[in-house]
Amino acid sequence: MDEKGRSFKNNMEDEMDLKRGPWTAEEDFKLTNYIATHGEGRWNSLSRCAGLQRTGKSCRLRWLNYLRPDVRRGNITLEEQLLILELHSRWGNRWSKIAQYLPGRTDNEIKNYWRTRVQKHAKQLKCDVNSQQFKDTMKYMWMPRLVERIQSASASAASLISTTGSATTSSCITTSNNEFMTYDYNNNNSIGERLGVMNNNNYITLENSSVAVSPVSDLTDYYNAPKPNPDQNLVGPQMLPDNYFDYSGLLDEDLTATHEQSNLDWFENIDEVVSSSSESLWNIGESDEDFWFCQQQQQFNNNNDF
DNA sequence: AACTAGACCAACCGCGAGTAC
DNA sequence: CGTACTCGCGGTTGGTCTAGT
Image 1 (cartoon, protein in one colour):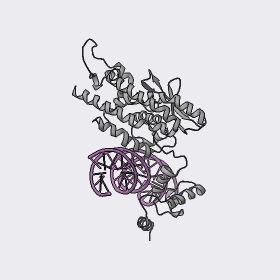
Image 2: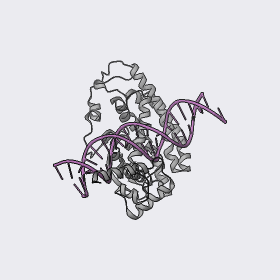
Image 3: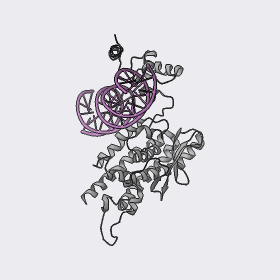
Image 4: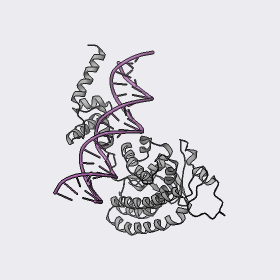
């Protein structure tokens, strides 16, 4: 039998013996043990040597996404959400690249977050997740709000960390200079690059980017875009040139009211939450976020009606 | 209690790039 | 140089859980 034939036969045998679907505890044990003694890599032969009836691919995925000791589990924090949104605006669906900036998070986890949470909100707003409208909503509404919430929480979180010593592992934080960066809470030092600066508690500019940011979504474009004549006594959100929505009306008026109220609710919650556990601290965002998005959806639909 | 819809997430698949032979 | 293999990435699927009816 020639080399091709042997390879084909081996592949057929592999196919016949292969196991798919959820991993058992025994398989996990075998894989973890094998990697502990022999290291990772050469996944196909690793699978055979470890006595696993799995493809190399499957072993690699299981190790990277689940068994690796530094995999961080649990809810995506506010800081991580902010990072994901920002990095996605930079790089798009480059999940593995984005994951590099979120220690312990896998590309799969981030991808799942994006598809379930972010795309859900796009659906609620009745617009495409890749549309400029939704990108702007994220950039000018959602992200500033996240920053606000992070800042609000940071004081409480900081005291929590100082008392417990190891409340979290690593994440992205905002500093007193309005910078935000990846941070190792356990060792109390910065472990990543400085990612950007907040302006007026509202906007974020990214620095040190090795990849050009799309000029269309650059804030300077937003500011430089000709504004409607202020003398025009227009009511409600106004369409700017180049299809920019003017969200300032939303920020200043209706939204602020609901926003402040939801913040009040949130602040009422946070003392209680912080005193209970750090895990819960990051969980409270979801209902608040959903509430906020309901408001956005209404406003957004009003915009389109206008 | 039974059913349904939606959310979540682990796992699979296909493809392209890199590497070994 | 061509082929097979490996690896990693992004897209997709399907199982499980939960909330609502």
